[in-house]
Image (cartoon, rainbow, N blue to C red; front, side):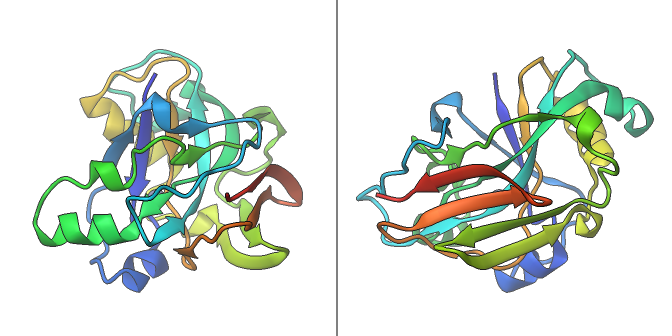
Length: 203
Ligand code: ZN
């Protein structure tokens, strides 16, 4: 399986990092070895001094497809959760400045913690979903899917032009503003509406 990630999909996050608002989705991939499941702890790696959290809504592809139009996209995902796009911001900035691919800053082991999936049939309106990340009981990021630059269906239309989407593939759909550094012993809890789907520790 593959993990497709959309960068800079919330205007206020693009501006907090000093990036222009993209005209087309910014796409990158993470390998399956970056997945962290079942609320297992994340261990801060020694190759970075600035590991950041980015909470994101994640959808799971339920059906094989290629060249999917936005209109039919809802048929292609059936589960939803929250994930953290963990980023070594110092490495990303160095690579970005050098004009190099920044995969290693986002694709290392454990860089994709995933919450418990729930069926999309439980969601009333995908285009108006509140989510938030709390660290040590303090809200650090708050988002609503109505603020996405590219919605779920447009993302599926765009990425399926390039990649065949397979059952079980995941799409991280971008982070709202408020990203910041992780520290040892932080407890991260991510909520979709009022339901905690992810709860883990930094070690
Ligand atoms: Zn991200």
